[in-house]
Length: 65
Image (cartoon, rainbow, N blue to C red; front, side, top):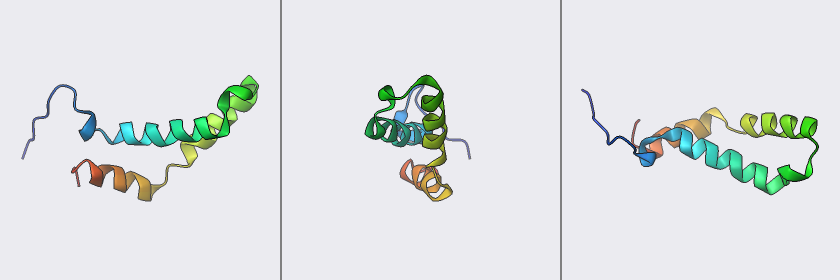
């Protein structure tokens, strides 16, 4: 079964929720205060906080599972 979505539907995009979690982490640690090399490391750590359980929740929230 194919479901057609509107051209832009952020409510059906789990990546938007993942980026929201990453951005809130970066805001919480104050990413602007780090030197460039440390900022890259913190960005890497921000992506690591997304767990498989969280990704299932993102998909479930969008109604895609």
